[in-house]
Image (cartoon, rainbow, N blue to C red; front, side, top):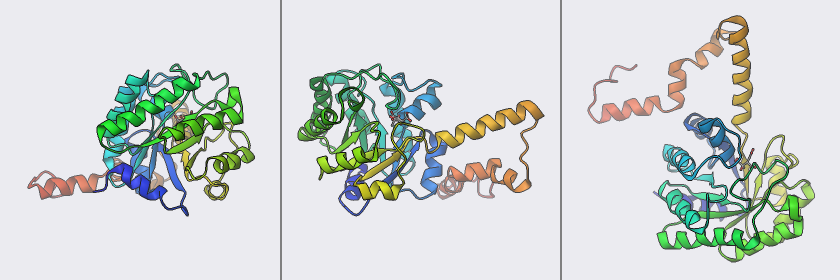
Length: 303
Ligand SMILES: C[C@](O)(C(=O)O)[C@H](CC(=O)O)C(=O)O
């Protein structure tokens, strides 16, 4: 089977294509996105931090938290490449190198590295602090060198958060410098007008540019078609699962608290989330078939 980075590079090689990546953060949300037929997934760092640690996206998740989650998600379906958040790379050049090696070993197809300070925050919050350009470039260079050393591929996405404090031209110039030393894809975080979106794609062409579509964030809403028309080649939706999960669980909590029951309003809705229906969504049938094929008898008569 093709290595995951190679699969992603094949998608990137088709200029008529925009790669649509729903943001997932655990096994269930990843399976739901895989079952829906997406050709690439995005592992959100914000979602990983919230779901695994119960904490906000403030640079709390470590390399171990992120790599473990990414490896689990990437392993669910090796035919579908995973783009994973790698924040700042989790330290100096040596740490960025380790992150690169470990993401490659975890089967991650691509990762993004940014220029915020290690005590970072979500790119759509105010008062972000960024590192000097040389420090940023040393992170990118560390990733490029570690990839060469590993003799294995991973797509390096250079993200900059410099727009908020330094303005458009300086942010784009950081991206150009990152591309010049080996980054494959550019990611201008938190731009605030559609015009800026169009301009960044134009200025960086032919390098593919990623659009981060955060619902309720600072970037205006683009549909997939609009993003493609403007020139973006990858679009990630970090809140694709987080928003719906958050809203429904808040409602369910309210219902349980107020009525003392978790019963659904109708039998059909109830059946759709029965234990068996949920397990089917995460591979129950395949797991039973695997066991039977190996000569197991536990599931031969079903569950
Ligand atoms: C892309 C991002 O880094 C993420 O963790 O998914 C976040 C998204 C978010 O906080 O909703 C970001 O900094 O934009």
